[in-house]
Length: 315
Ligand SMILES: O=C(O)CCC(=O)C(=O)O
Image 1 (spheres, protein in one colour):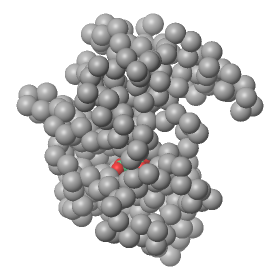
Image 2: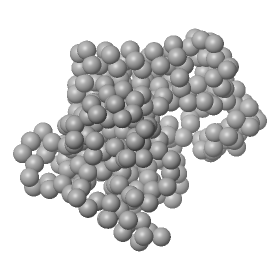
Image 3: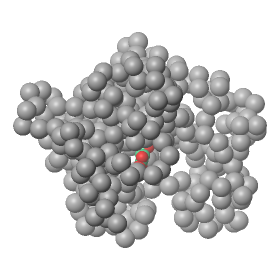
């Protein structure tokens, strides 16, 4: 099965090759080097001014006015320590349908206002699907970002997932609040984290262990605690990356390395996610986002190479 997948990917990569030796942009070249040595690269203030303000406003409108988020959504307020200890133990790594059948979620119909939603349910994470809006794609497929991604991989991968998450303070850690490695692909996997709010340890920093991609430790379980990780990399270890960043920053990361989402102590943080994987003509999962033909027509030829055809609506 593995061999079939590898062959399918090799075939899918034909005519998508990128020759790193031809890069003439020092910024891109330095970022690719950082990805190779550290596993991440930080692009500060990549988005700014009016674009950043517009996108922040659009995200807030979607969440706070339209309440157009993914339902069912886990309500921290419904979790009971003595009853739900099995789920707490698993860091809630179960299907949404199970959370729903346990009565731990809320639906669109349960929400009358943003304030009521927060007060009544205290969601830890809200997920917003990628709007089919050129202004968002301009950032998710920013020329510098895709230049780094393609040169790191050596070919043009696909943008397989695109979404936004808003994280709130919460009591019970849920899935990626714990240390983990992403397992979408053994060899080629990059995520771009797009910060729409300032983000530091008070507002839910992103954490990464530099140089951990090829470290053989921490591979036998899905999640690890802070104590597990601190035994090897204490808080003051210079291999720890903590995102003390301003809104408008993008971190590109090889998330096969150890990482986790910090829980905000106050306020919230808005983060955009772009997941890049090798093209595979046999990938069977349904598209994780859809883009209209008219939005696609705003993108450059290079940006369009990242969009799988199956994600194009009316196409
Ligand atoms: O939100 C974050 O900071 C990390 C998210 C994460 O762990 C993931 O996408 O795998």
